[in-house]
Amino acid sequence: MHMTIETLTAQLSGHVAPAMATPLTPDGFRLNANVIPQLVDFLIERGVGGLFVGGTTGEGILLSDAERRQLHALSVSAAARRVPVLLHVGTNDTQSAVALAQHAASIGADAIVAVTPTFYGVSDEALLTHFAAIAGAAPETPFFAYDIPQMAVNGISTALAQQMIADIPTFAGVKCSRTDMQAIRRLIDAVADSVLILAGNEPIMLGSLALGAHGAISGLATAIPEPFVALLAAFAAGNWEAARQQQRLINRLLAHMAAGPRIGNIKAILHARGVPVNRPMPPRSPGSAELWDELQLILDNP
Image 1 (tube, rainbow, N blue to C red):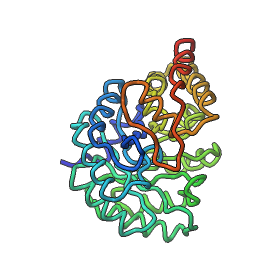
Image 2 (cartoon, rainbow, N blue to C red):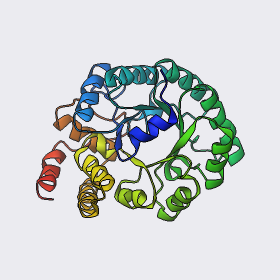
Image 3 (cartoon, rainbow, N blue to C red):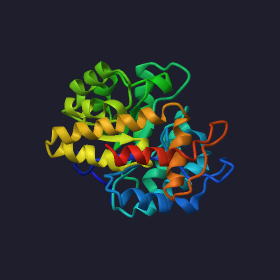
Image 4 (cartoon, one colour):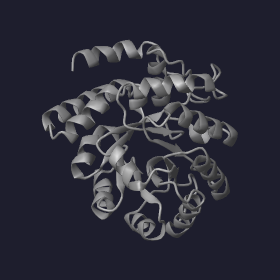
């Protein structure tokens, strides 16, 4: 049974869905399927509202299509309908993304997400055609566009988002990870009354929620979900002071991590917390083995 956009909106609003790290073998080159259920349980037990699988933090675009399908199937199975599972199916070519979307629908994904194609500039018209083909390949599954132009080159303009509302029946919203708060505001102003906006920029997450974002997706939350769960809960309860305290705590954690490799450090934290996700895929660097001890001091003295 497929989840409706209305049900998905209700379940993700006021919650964080971690951008789940992908467990790899110790050399970093292959998927380590055995650890996926352990990581899913680790996150659900800490109160997350959903899971975003195979995105930026999940190194999805670095995996083979066969490994992405395996990661997706095992994540959906491990979640066992306890929280919604959003599967990232974005690729640089439409045909591959369509095939991943079809597979995601066949295994019962609660939503599919696609980042814009990367490296080469693509027009809004071409992006609309690309996204419509992906969404059409899973016609009963809610579809999200992933907006991160600082990494992907291409982004989701307000005009494109409005056109997707008009042309794609399953368009459920945007995962917005832009760094420009004014650009985030313009997107929220333009479409947040019609579709779901999931805030992806961690240092300004509370600001995005205050402007009208409905929920959040965070990479750091895959390793340290607790302050993100607390921030979203405080915001949903109208407790602004508690929400501000959690945002400041998150920003202290981010600042302490800033000198090292982000994905490597996220995976090192998880490893230290008992979930052996191992290193990122080379040539990305592994993180600091001592980092979790240092971050715990911040968490214990907020």
